Structures are given as structure tokens and as C-alpha cells.
Image (cartoon, rainbow, N blue to C red; front, side):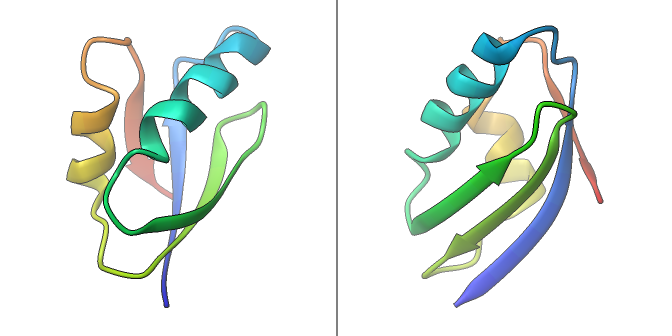
Length: 68
């Protein structure tokens, strides 16, 4: 199991959390995901997932990804 802690920036409301959760869960191998309203996030996956993978999944939504 691979774990990744990261921070999502640019959230304005609870819908931001819901949309980003939906997009990130579509990344191949993602098994669990937790995103707080402040953007603090944790992901578990069966295969390696990078910050770049997350950024690509969120492309065009206005959010940025940084390491935690």
C-alpha cells in the first residue's frame, strides 16, 4: 500500500472538496482518500500516485497541489 500526504490549495467551499474527491478517486490505484475542508489530504493507493498525477486529475479546476 502506498500513502501520500498532500495539500490542495484554492478551496472556497464544501463543493470544492466534493469535486476534487471525485476527480482524484478516478486515478488508477486510488483506494482511499481523505480531504479536509482546509485542503489537508491523505491518499492510499495500490500503485504509486504522484503529486503530478493529482494535479493532472484536477487540471482546469483552479486548485494547486503541494506536498504536506
